[in-house]
Image 1: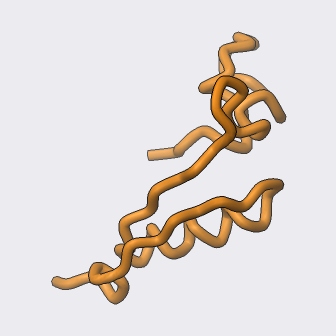
Image 2 (image 1 turned 180 degrees about the horizontal axis):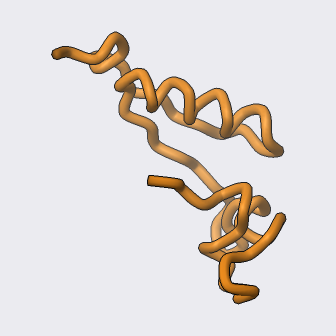
Image 3 (image 1 turned 135 degrees about the vertical axis):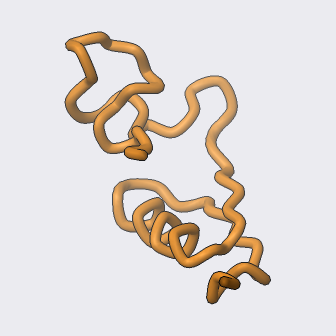
Length: 68
């Protein structure tokens, strides 16, 4: 079955929670998403929120982590 937004490419340049959450919804509907983040520091959400296994790994920030 074809996804509703499979024909779209979304470039996310947002910050905070609302912009990335919106692009997550678009990705869930099939759009391809490219995230643009500041060089060196990356997205601040990587360093925000709870961390899995109490590990301060920046890729494991609770607001940034993908749940499969």
